Image 1 (cartoon, helix red, strand yellow):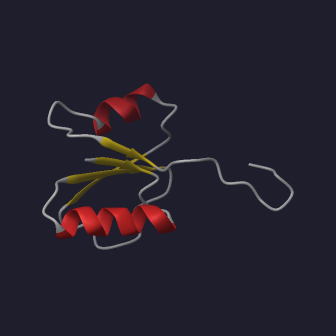
Image 2: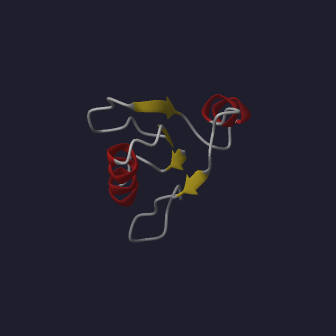
Length: 78
């Protein structure tokens, strides 16, 4: 299972839940995965980059949980 935005608050919870159920997980995010990555494959990069997408999604990928989104400050700047 690929989790985009897996380094975020909700993403980390989804990754933990999947990992606890024995599901192979790949995290894709622009920032490094902040937790112990045991049992988690991490691809760091921007999803707009085709090479990042190709590295993350393989023939073995069962599905994608898409949680990635641009983060804006309180003034709406990304």
